[in-house]
Amino acid sequence: MLDKLRIVLIGTSHPGNIGGTARAMHNMGLADLALVAPRCEVYGAESHARASGADALVSNAKVYATLEEAVGDCTFVVGASARVRHLPWPMLTPRALGERLPGECAPEAAQAALVFGREDSGMTNGELQRCHAHVHIPTNPDFSSLNLAAAVQVLAYECRLAALGADDAADTPFGVEWDNPPASHDDLERFFAHLEQTLTEIDFHDPDNPRQLMARLRRLFMRSHIDSMEMNILRGILGAVNKQSRALARQESHDGNG
Ligand code: SAH
Image: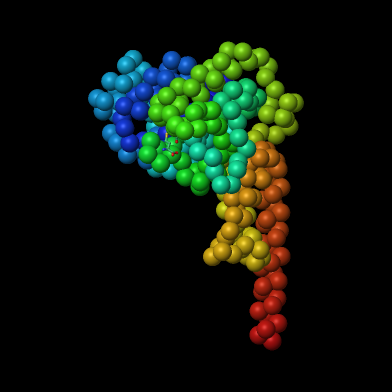
């Protein structure tokens, strides 16, 4: 299970936090570290010094330009945030996150990611809306934000505890063996782009006055944990809607010309 869990750090600005994260991960038996658009030197002396023995994780850390690339293959993505957001998202405690992981990691094609924000500004709403759920470490409300590597340590520890206690034959996310593999983050993002384009085409969605429509639809679909067959059906429905609306548009312009 722990081999299917990636730690993703967005826009880290202190190399010490990269080293500290590597050390926390290695202590807890995690190895897959991904860095999205880091704002500091990654492979230098300072990150290696703080890694103290977990150097290999720093050397093997992969750097990506965007969050999408870092989690494209992931079937379960959880964002760690110190702040409550305006549009509430399904929320997990660190313990509940650990309990969910064996099931989420059970399918053959499963890949999970825990995403952490910037030291100064955390994660944007757009980044958090790409996650299936949010996890919040229940800290002192008057002083809620942990050091980045410390937050990684707390969550990695809960994941390790869960892995140690997990039954080998863990169920899938829905408590039974599922018939289709989960959709990946890439599949979901292609679907959301297609959905937005279709809703615009049929005049349901106005990109100039978006309100919270796409965020709410994202939340709905992320909550339902779509599998790959369901994804194909939804894309097929959108394709059929596109075909009809384009035929109608052609018909109208034809009638208008005639
Ligand atoms: N000042 C930032 C917090 C940055 S702390 C803000 O206002 O959002 C850096 C990262 O550590 C956060 O983005 C989050 O991923 C993680 N983190 C810190 N405290 C946390 C907490 N209490 N619960 C969950 N994640 C936390």
